[in-house]
Length: 139
Length: 232
Image (cartoon, rainbow over the protein chains, first blue to last red):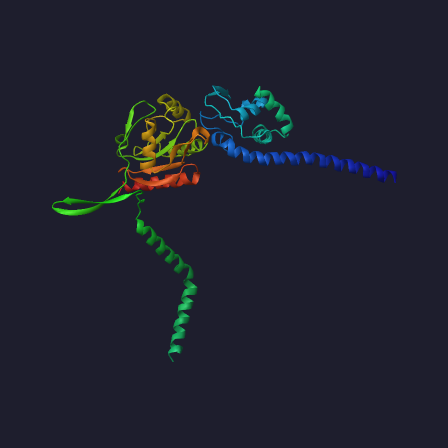
């Protein structure tokens, strides 16, 4: 009897763990699905569907060394950027327009998608982490 | 009596139909296709307004239809030299309207027009002509840098700037596209994503959606058809 209870408890814990993980995973998948849609509508015109960029006009996102600094990626999606930049050793100099219409959540979804797709990330970039970063870079 | 005679004939017809159904359908389909393409010939239509003009030739009055054509113009290319209608004499060309700071459909159009450029590269009968609709920003130097960054060299693809009113006028009235300033649109200018195919007589032979791969595939196949017209 004790053994049976033990097995049941262990089973419960296991199931709980499993459902916890998949809750997180379900949320991430939802972020990614939205992220794909938002990327297509707000980013892909210049950076292209596969994130490859366009010649020397618009830098790639796929495999870009710019992805290392996630904070600045989050900030430049909202606020845009101007002036010359270097991506993977190549110079680019076209302004990226600010996207003030994107909410914090939408930026989190885009970031989750592009980091999963082009930086091999398996974790969500939660809106709870994005909001303080956006507040900080506004100043 | 007559019914008896008729029945075997009908039967024969029916069995002929059953045996050769596929061929009959195929043949009539061919006939239909032929008839359809026959009405327009092999050549692309000429688009735009046409006027009947009556002239006196050798003492007789002759009525002829005159098609809309691209009038002469004078713009400046990314190399700083003047481009006129004469620059495009004896060429078929694709015209479009864009601006370098455009965040919406222009990058898509440039990706697609680059495909056309790669496909017809070094073909002496083909040119591309991109007009900026934001000449205040898109100076010769800006256009030159843009062309270089896009990976375009040589004079086959010209990026032109010039008097704002004249660019908008030729866009709307001659190339039949819409281009107008709109402060609420991203980048401040709304415009169509059209590519316009112009023949050697400066007639418009097709207008295509320059933002989609399908539209531009159609443009490239029509360009080949148009080039074939001049080989006959």
